[in-house]
Length: 188
Image 1 (cartoon, one colour):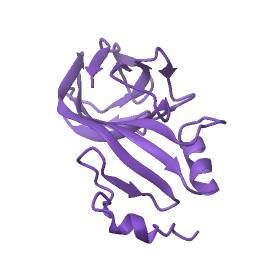
Image 2 (cartoon, rainbow, N blue to C red):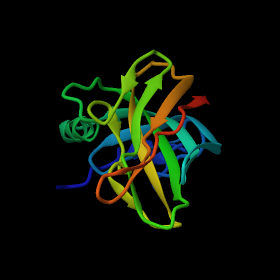
Image 3 (spheres, one colour):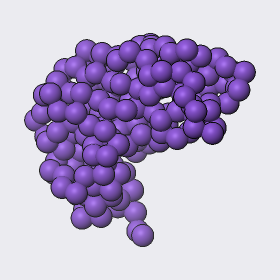
Image 4 (spheres, rainbow, N blue to C red):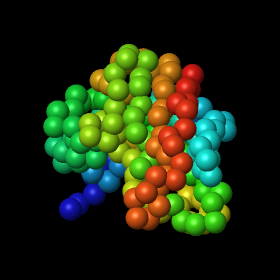
């Protein structure tokens, strides 16, 4: 697979970030298959939810405008988001969070159960949510940091708030240890 070649005009644009690290609204980059990612908004902070022996801290939320410039880029986005159809351009929400385990034994988490958007739409891992934390082992008295991505709608969709529901924790044998925490609401 050959990496996408960024157009020369975009490379000269002062908002272009070759590294892919988007920090200010309007900055953009390209992924290797040809998706142009433009930062719309970003919010940093420490938003926490707790459940017995577990703390989930969301530290960053970004709203990204995505435009697939190649068929391969659109196909990969459909696969990542578990969506058979995907408008192009489209928007995503990127969430960075840390799961801290206070127990003296390793636990499993099912990650984010679902996200409800301003529009009233909901996304889950079955459709619209890519969450690598699902099924992951959190070590005893340890923590792990993850980044998840959720479909927010076609270009032009305004997302001003989201409600996130996270799962509880389980033993490595699948027995419940802690219930799912309360929902967490963000204002963007």
